[in-house]
Amino acid sequence: MSRYSLFGKFPKNIKIRHLASLFLMVSASSVCSTVLAAKYTMSINYLYPSDITSNEQAAALTHFKILVESATNKDIEVKLFSNLQLGSEVETTKQLKDGALVQSTLISSGAMSSFYKPYQITSTPFLFTDYATAWDFYDSKWFAEFMHPLIKERGIRYLGTFDDGGGFVAFTNNKHIIKTQADFKGLNIRVEQNPAAVEIVKSLGANATPLSWGEVQTSLATNLVDGQYNAPGTNAAFKLWDVTKYTTLAGLVYNTTTWLVSEKWFASLPENYQRIVVHAARESVFLGHGVAARVSLSGWQESCKHFTECYILPAEERAKWKAIALPAYKEWIVKSFGIAETEVDSFWAAVAKASKDVDQRDSIFLQ
Image 1: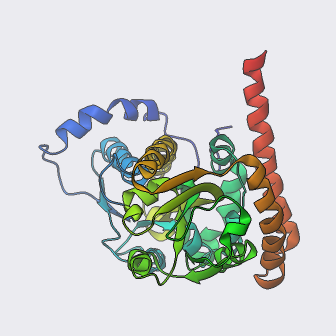
Image 2: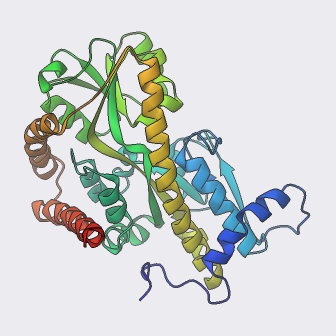
């Protein structure tokens, strides 16, 4: 059985390793080549700038474009729209059901839960402690099946999960460096417009103010809020050191971006083209993991150059925060948000299994 059997097998006459080998050749010739009009157009909307060296989304989607267009002889034309040129994440995700103007979009974890309620469980505080487990989990058959109801419920197909800006988040604020849970007292932290984020930050002792991404820099510059949190890659990409002074890499949550495609548009493709799209997407997600980790590392290094002070939260303090935040979060998501406790426990058990699988795989190298 193929590793991604839920999505189908790749056509025998087009192998992904052959597509990958075309990467440099196609990218060098794509600008000057003359082709017939495409039979299908796949417009993809995403948040970050188009610079493939600055973020995982641009790099992965550029790779995807090359793979798909080369494998279909440009029968499928992939158009990339950075900086949310086609509209907000929520607006473009709503448009996917029709699939006429936007065929694919990337949507952040906070916004995703408004389209698929169970996705809110991904906002669990301290869900992961390492990249290997996060990647193993989000690339698993279990998680693909977890997302599969989107097709029937929303007319949207799940393609993969990116590590938003590097996944593990870092706080930035204007008041003082955060080293202990007590340091949250009196701080007003901007959170995404997601009730889970509000509950988690409040449980740690800070005030939480939900704001859209477009309001973040102005709100920090005018002291409407004291701080915010995002992955280091995001903090660096948007130079949040210009509006905040201190940063703490805490890994409170693991930010993700979900890659979606219109099921109506996808179903209009011939079966072999469907497989090309899916397998090119899966390879591009893998590429994105590596880029995200690099972006996070370089983003943290840049943060420590520009912020007044930077700090990495030690494991002992993380455990203390988790002991406070996790029970509060579970009570909220079950009693207030309405997710069944059994579903939450099942999700957490799948993460624990992924962690165990990673440990077992690593143990081979100890023999």
